[in-house]
Image (cartoon, rainbow, N blue to C red; front, side, top):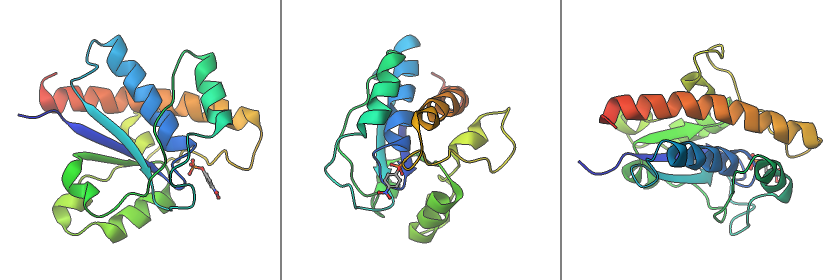
Length: 161
Ligand code: 4NP
């Protein structure tokens, strides 16, 4: 069986989903599973396509020893063939993904990040930090750590890792 593939999705692919991607890679490294899972991120909108992660997100992550990388891109319908876990940050991202999904198999891959965190009420969102202060970026990191821990546990369970 090939490696499980995870794609985190937000609106712009410069703040929340690159943060979730960096956090998840960090957790994989800690678990000696660096190459055991394919990880990516994308946005439902293309306005920031080609850009590096927002420097406020990168700085907040760096303070915790987490590196953010990649260039923003838009999630497209073919991505449903490339990924097993499609992980939106908020309800708007989730709606946009479900509207793009070609079939039930694709729709079944979509689940909110915080729904992998057993301590979050169902339907909880990762709030968009883009127009707010620095504390919003710290909060996104905390939320991503909790969600990514739950997601990693699920992926390990599903794939005997
Ligand atoms: P993200 O944050 O979806 O977490 O990457 C945003 C980035 C850009 C914008 C909104 C949210 N924007 O409106 O440009």
